Amino acid sequence: MNIKVDTHSHTLVSGHAYNTIQEMAKMAKEHGMEAIAFTEHAPEMPGTCGIFYFENLKIVPRERYGIKMLFGTELNIMDSEGTVDMRDGLLKHLDIVIASIHTPCFCGERTKEAVTRAYVNVMKNPYINIIGHPDDSRFPIDYDTLVAAAGEHHKLLEVNNSSLNPLSFRVGARDNYIKMLELCRHYGTSIIINSDAHCAADAGNQRFAFELLQETDFPPELVANYSRKLLQDYLERAEL
Image 1 (cartoon, rainbow, N blue to C red):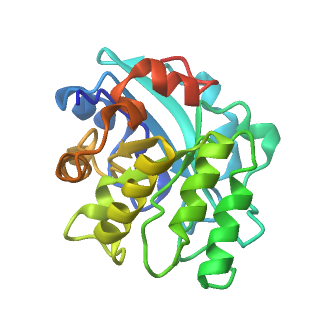
Image 2 (cartoon, rainbow, N blue to C red; image 1 turned 90 degrees about the horizontal axis):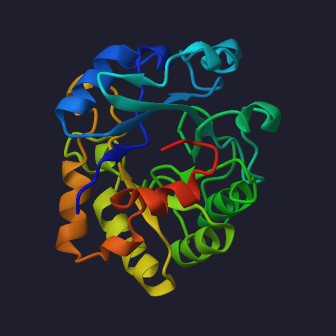
C-alpha cells in the first residue's frame, strides 16, 4: 500500500501536543505524505482551543512545503445518545470531522451496550466522516454492530497508529483491531489508518497500523487512504 494522506493529527493548539502547523506539515512531507489533516480536539477536551479557532480556519493557507493541508476537528462523543461538542452549523464548514470517545469527556455508562449505542448514534450525523480509535477495552464495543453500522452510514473506522504504539495508554487495541478488521473484511466496510500524531516526529507515521494490515492480509481496496479517489468519496467537503 502506498499511503499518502494522514487524516488525524494535532498541533500545540490541542493543548497536549507539541508542534505548530508548519512543523507538522514539513515533517509529514519528509515522511512521504501528500496531504495531512489537522484535527484539533473539540472544546470539551481539557486544555484545547476555543470555538473561535475553528470558526477562523478560513484564513489559513491550504498548502505548505508542497503538501496539502486539511483542517477539521476531533469531536468528543459525550454520551450514549451520540451527543458531540460542536454544532452542525460549524461542522459542515470543516474539511474533515472525526468523532472519538475520550476518558475526560465521555459521561455515559461504560457498558458494551451503552458504548456501542454511542457510536451508532454518532454515525447518524451527516457531517462526521471518521470514527476515531474505536479500540480501547476500557470502552467495550460490540464490533459486529459497529462495523455493520459504519458500512450502513458510510463512515470510516480508524486504525489508529498511536493506539498500537507499545507506549499507548489505551487497553487492548491490537486484539480489538484484529477483531474489527476481520469484521470489516466480512461486511466490506472501509477503514482508514492514521497517525494521530501529537508531535512532528510522528506526522505521517503509520508504521504500527500498516504492519497490522500486512499481518492480517487486509485488502487494500478497503483502506480509504490507499486511494485518493476512495478517500474523496468519504470526505465530500475536502479538496484532495
